[in-house]
Amino acid sequence: MKAGNPRDADLRELLASRGLRITEQRVALLLEMMKVRSPISHPELTERMSGTTLDRATIYRNLLTLADAGVVVRTQLGDNVWRFELPRTLSSDHSHHPHLVCSECGNVRCLPASTVKLHGEAAKSQVAEVQLRGRCAACVSA
Image (cartoon, rainbow, N blue to C red; front, side):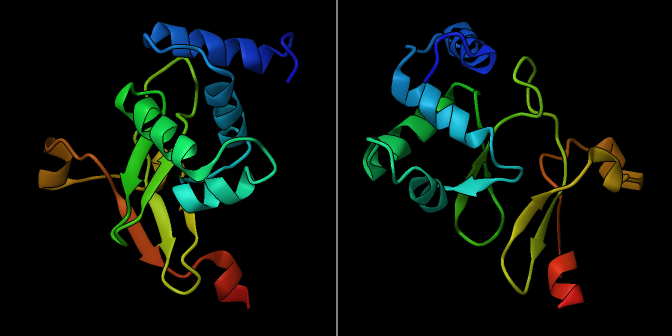
């Protein structure tokens, strides 16, 4: 890992701003999470990081710590699997956006916030999460 990498510096600053110890493990975990575009489960992240020195338990403990500090967002999409994702911008809180959960392949995708517009009672309420279920584009075209 290069110390001069701007991403590395941003992640270190983010950890410090949330009162967390800056460890190489946390930085490596966050760098890997920056590579994915949708929420990722602990097993999926462990598989992606199999070539590193981080073991399954270390990854899980760090995910929980990062979620508790608000560095990553933990989401449960109705399938009893916690998924984790980085906020859209590292400097701000996670903006709420809907997720598409494919009923065929199980893939989860983040959708732009403008995809869903709430009306009526829902617009007046504090909605924490919106999930759309259906078939993803890949499954529809297959």
